Length: 304
Length: 259
Ligand SMILES: Cc1cc2nc3c(=O)[nH]c(=O)nc-3n(C[C@H](O)[C@H](O)[C@H](O)COP(=O)(O)OP(=O)(O)OC[C@H]3O[C@@H](n4cnc5c(N)ncnc54)[C@H](O)[C@@H]3O)c2cc1C
Ligand SMILES: Cc1cc2nc3c(=O)[nH]c(=O)nc-3n(C[C@H](O)[C@H](O)[C@H](O)COP(=O)(O)O)c2cc1C
Ligand code: FES
Image 1 (tube, each protein chain N blue to C red):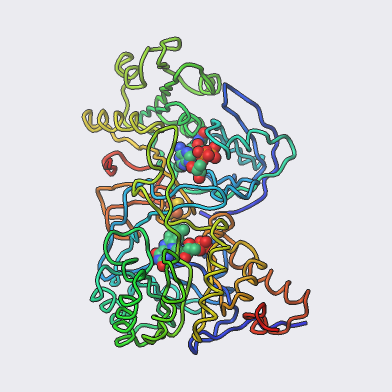
Image 2 (image 1 turned 90 degrees about the vertical axis):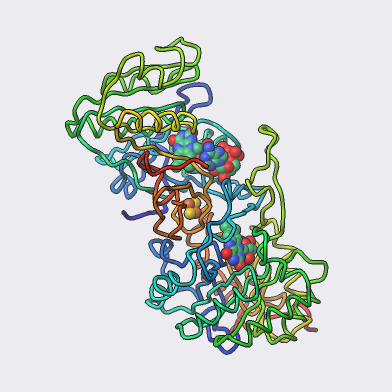
């Protein structure tokens, strides 16, 4: 039985519903030695800003039970190098390109989005949810009015469809999802990492130089599934679900919660072939339960 | 430099010191491509431990397609590895990183503690290729390990904190007290040792290569977890943050700035 796994996000057709989570995959060059990027629905790049960012001091990561904390701090080469080097690189592959954008001010975001206007990228993902930078970032993602304003500012100049990447570090994800939709967002992706902390009791210090970091991996999956479910019920725009996806069944869980597509992040550190394996495992699930089209499963838990 | 992820069979594992293990693995693709100073990622079976453990190659046997790792039990992951027996399987990926740039002039190999293992393969390769006067300086806290393997290859000078083996003190004390000379220093060990080696090399106008350690996630240069401050701008971000896993772990002493 041939199953259909292709999905459409804001008018962009993906061959399958799996992308890689921003920041865990660079721009694909390093992993292409191990996996065939053509087999991914889309590649989501590391966050890129208007100018190069140094990122945070090390240690930038720490392992936790079933997860990890990171405080990389959005080290990136800036949009000039990115346009010259990373976009042409990814264009060699038959996969959609999602560029993740970060900034400290609204003007920073607008600048990057404008620069990307004439570039061959398919979707923009606006990161207003990074817990690891002092200014900007998450500040835009924790207040519905600020989120509305930045979404609108980006939408005004964007030539590609805009995905707003939401933070789980909020009291009410529904309010945030609605604010982004009202401002014209074409899609949502969630969740970014959950702010956490680890203390090394032997050294009596923080495990991360930044003290706090973003928790990712299987430890956060139930939170992510719940938030995707709540957001999907509240908005009509499509959702890219992520947070702790390790297997095809994890991915199916997000689809059933209401996501149209999924993103695989931390799993890639444990298994560099995770994203491609998850595509296969989703197909196997569909065959087993005789699901012809992945879109049939979306939000199915709430249908009577 | 092809990187392979593979299930490796354990040929044998033995405890060679208190909490120190030596394991031989069958991993032909990795042995075929590996160089001294490179490392491999070891993956835990326990899925609550997501991140790979980077361990340096201690020996590479290209004829048999095998590699040797020597590691200290430092936490739960290495504890898990220490229970592996002959014919068990372990997932590994490698070879990773750049390895040492080998030159055939007078070499001083400096290893401190658990930084000693990668020096063994380097000592073998340098002597096999006919490098001039290869000397090893090994620093231990107390108990020695791998000493016999080194002694079969080249002259070895010891330092130990308690003075039971060689000079009492650090590898730098050994270098000074034996007045060791060379044209190229290769070093791996704890950060304070590497800083001292760097200062010594710069002061004496000797070229030195330092093998660094940093917390890692991907191990292949994608996640930017493992950076170190570098004098020159890096290839990835064009700032001054070289990736230890990809641009390193070996850096020339003049490149490295300490945070
Ligand atoms: C390039 C490189 C080569 C190395 N080579 C060797 C070697 O040949 N022999 C050896 O004994 N050790 C080596 N180490 C250190 C080794 O990686 C750690 O001791 C090991 O990861 C500890 O894992 P654990 O689960 O036992 O400890 P835990 O403390 O439980 O580990 C928790 C997390 O911290 C990381 N971590 C802990 N200590 C270190 C460390 N010192 N460096 C980097 N990450 C760390 C682990 O990988 C894991 O992600 C090397 C490290 C690097 C970066
Ligand atoms: C090391 C690391 C770096 C990340 N960098 C970014 C980033 O640059 N931009 C962003 O929007 N999210 C970033 N994230 C968040 C992930 O894209 C993802 O939302 C989160 O990790 C949850 O998914 P996971 O559990 O599958 O990893 C990063 C996550 C990790 C672990
Ligand atoms: S560990 Fe990911 S870049 Fe080095």
